[in-house]
Amino acid sequence: MIDLKLLQKDFDASAASLKRKNVDSELINSLKTLSETLKNTKLVYESAQAAQNERSRLFGQYKKEGKSTDELKVEVDAAKAQLVDLLEAQRIAEEALETIAMRVPNFPDSDVPDGEDENDNVELRKVLTPPVFSFTPKEHWELAEQNGWIDFERGVKLAKSRFSVVSGMGARLERALINFMLDFNRERGFMEVSVPMLVNRRALEGTGQLPKFEDDLFKVDGEELFLIPTAEVPLTNLYQDEILNAQDLPIKMTGYTSCFRKEAGSGGRDVRGMIRQHQFHKVELVSITRADQSDGVFDEMVACASDLLAALGLPHRLVTLCTGDLGFGAARTVDLEVWLPGQNAYREISSVSNTRDFQARRAKIRYKEEGKNILAHTLNGSSLAVGRTMVAIMENFQQEDGSIILPTVLQKYL
Image (tube, rainbow, N blue to C red; front, top):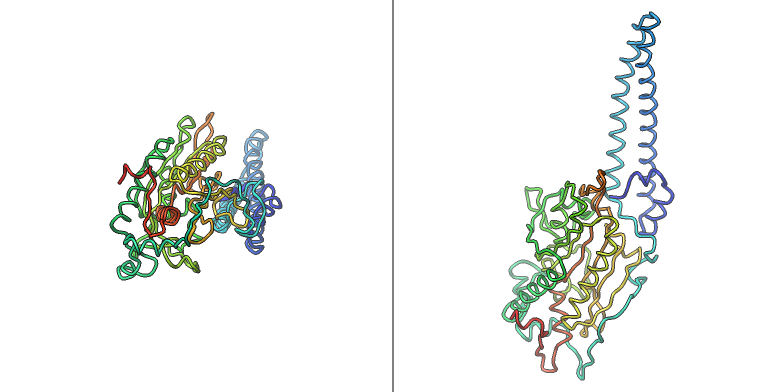
């Protein structure tokens, strides 16, 4: 959640920052109205409290002077009742502002490039050179079916569209990739953690998926439990409502889970194949840091995901997202886009984001330093989406006869 104290201190600057992220004017106006209401109720309460303190002080003075305190006592009792009402009005105003604020995205960092959508993202660099084929490269679904790795029709039979069955060497490759990714990340200093794939509403509110994106989640009927859209949710919320020791930070974690998304509204060519499925596997990176550590850890996480792709021999590029393409909770994001010869395009395979203290404020993740409780910074990133990595391997290492040469680093896992 955005810093409401900052919002009240300098609303114009906060509103300008939110407009950079394409937050609509109606929502910003609601924030302004509710922020002013809260500010006014606080001023009224503080004024009434000061007057009450002054009346209470007069008791001693009246007794010294031998004056009757009967009338003063009536005034004090009436003022006490008024203070209770004013405090309740302040609570209601705070609750109303927080309810709206839960639907407001994070402020973008000041140096994030302005832009409307993905077309305004800024390329940082390319890593490895895309392969050149002497034949027309096939797309991954053709290769998957030819090699018997993925069965899309049986996935639909078992569930519905955008589910698939991976078998044979495809299933072995999937398992090898998960193990390779986890080992790679662990060697980079990320502690491996296995977490539940069902979480409660509080956890999803903590990382920002709720309340805004409930329509994209799979919910357990009759319970306040949801299938996770990413391991970011349980990994970050491991430290929900905790006060950590500053010397224990950063906490760097990696974990493998299945992920579940309705993908409401998505379509186009991604409906076919493995690019955008309702269930997919992903290895995640999550870090909890002090404020002064988060930029350095962000760079570590980007490098880890990029080096992982390079170790697999997969050409990719790094892209800084513009304000219009940033995710809800992100203050800054670098996407890693892998080269797909079948599509003749770079496609996202990892997204590394620094949310600053946005998620920590929602989830109440703090650390103690010099006797003060300070909001932590939280970061997350894909490392990597397993299905998309399989797609990239199939398309980049395909042979003219449709066979696929697997990366050398995976051989020991196979």
